Amino acid sequence: MPLTRLAPSLEDEVEPATAAFYRSALRALVDAGVPFLVGGAFAHACFTGIRRSTKDLDLFIRREDYERVAALMQKHGWRTELTYPHWLAKVYAGDEFIDLIFNSGNGLAPVDDRWFRDNPESLVLGVPVRIANPEDGLLTKAFIMERERYDGADVAHLLHAGAEQIDWPGLIARFGPHWRVLLAHVTLFGYVYPGERHRVPAWVLEELMSRLAAETREPPGTDPHVCAGTLLSREQYLHDVEQLGYVDGRLTPVSTMTPTDVEVWTEAIPGRQAEGTDAADAGVLRRVA
Image (cartoon, rainbow, N blue to C red; front, side, top):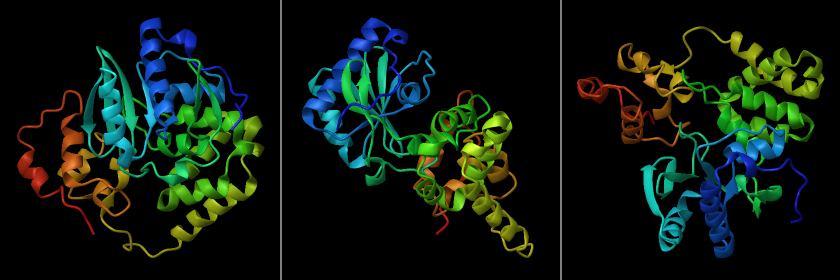
């Protein structure tokens, strides 16, 4: 695949020693023929031209390739860690690290064959690599609505950079039952850029709005007692599932997370006091078939 003309990667925003580590890891993966995609701030810079310093390099891989990647990284003298088995591993060179991502944090977007279709290729730190498609970035970023981090601006900038090139039918299909989240973001896009509203195809909004209208006509009481807010924020809706008796949206069939995944991910919240919650969690952390 020829190199696609994308914006430059973040060569100048990364410290030389860190860049050398990233570059060596990228070359090792390319030479070994391991399928991977560059995402995160590097991909965002390629598509939008927005350049910002970043603490890590995000690489998307299939979960079944993790052991092979880990062995390759260890062969080069770097330490690997399966940090969160449901979505993330890390490769360390001293204090520097690379994230190996094989799902989204909420378990909704496992990296599968759909991620490896028609990916643009570009130079990242001088290495020719494949870049995660904007649709994949939109899918994962759309659900990040934590108190300390909200990726809605990234979504808006991705749309601003290339709304006309988005595979909208495919994107709507990828969002599936979470189409309201997509509707929220395209609505906000029109608010952020009122002069660019026309760039999102009219049929997209018409389709999503028709679904919304159909839902409003449904009789009350038909919706399950689920709090899907946990799919947007791992912390801000814990009160609903721990105290109000809502079923955790991550433990319904839409997510790949298990009760153990949820417990580990919850305990990792900075500053959260986990002791004393085990008894309450025991009645909440059950997967709904």
